[in-house]
Length: 335
Length: 301
Image 1 (cartoon, rainbow over the protein chains, first blue to last red):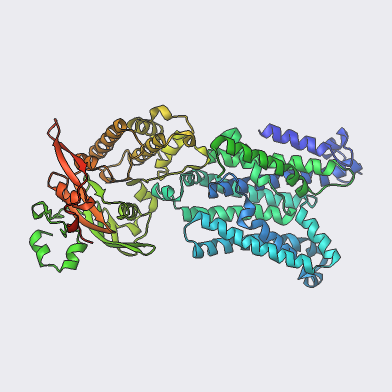
Image 2: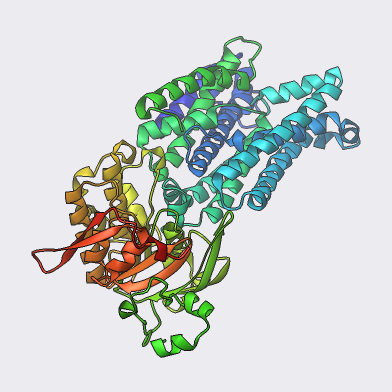
């Protein structure tokens, strides 16, 4: 599995708008040192291409893991982190930042400006998740389907706010808003890669400790209670993890659809339904999927690139239909 | 509390104590004296609501090793009482104590190691394999070296050993019931004096399996000193395999009586049917239901 991951990463780094020679790969170890002039290929490889490839892997892993957690939480193989309102909340905050607080942004120092959008989207994703948890506890205490419906309601509000922002936006704002919404991995650099690596590893470690208990949830909330698992505590922890993983991904890359939905499904078909195996497998498969999608996205129409969100949705839609048909055939129904 | 004390109490209290006897048959009156150590499960005026319907107050207690069948017409609140005892439904008033300690003060995993519940219906997501479903009964134990063996033994006891390796969602209703029963066995397999609550455990099974699994449940509980509480519809199962009958009607526990021939009259009035006793070859007896409305008027509204 990890060999496949490494091979895919190397191949993905090889393809791109700028050709990479073998000598570029070895430049990092060449004795010339940092002062020596490096070829364009080596510069692209080490400072643009590789960070992006590694970033795609980590973001894919985050999306895959958050998808697996969401599906375990809702006991439904068709659930997706965007159901919880994470994506909606992030997009809503981003839209507000672009349109409503455009003036406030201009007052910030130049160096901070690129961070404004991701940070506000991250805050938006997190705050929707916590609002969701509080609200669901208050409106429909203890019920996981109630949590789902609360998420749908919050998502509707977020979508309407985005719609309002779109309506009020200037042409330029509209362009940056729609570009953000489509999703891209182009902003990757090594510091960001390090940040998400720490986040994903930490969250994955925590999620793995929850996995045994998440299995209990598959028996239903009541039975989980009977065997000593509090669905309420579990769901609070799972929501925080989903918010962190998916919120980070959405904040920096926009909405990348379907990876969170399809990765756990593929994982289950490979390793079976045991969450202790599904979670790590979703992590790896999510990473591979997004790397694949991103590699296509930036190589198909060289020198331009397609936003990766368009690409995942384009592939994901038909795959989802196949999954639905498969589910219906096996169980005589969906759900 | 003995009978003499009960007579001095106002009628309300009498009812609340579960000692009232509106069905008549004073010779069957069974004043239960709680003595010695704390009962395994104690209910003190526990009440709950479900929509517009109130249930309770229920007051009763049960000792380790006792076998209680909850009987009553549909909608009488049997499952609700069981859900109160299993902690699935929170009490609006009153207090439940497990092993002398209020249930609210028990940690959920600690309680789950000594209280197992077989619900009336179950749906398992993701098509988990049978062994995983059964082993989840032991999820409350952090360190569980004997798990594999216990899961296999529990499956065998529930007549489900042949189902190992299958996906739960591909099993028939009766097979699913057996796997869930195995899960309950596994949950309290190596404990002493636990509480086993089952809600119509055998409804989806054929008669032969019903006999075998009811025997298995009773032997399993007896060997370990577990108290067994079952919601049942089959009167013969209740009369032959249980010591106490809790009769329920319209959300109230109206009687608590020993399961013997004297209970038959009360059962006739409870369901508004006639019952004919037939002696079995083994010294026991069975009842045959008959259409009969003669004593219906005596059933309290």
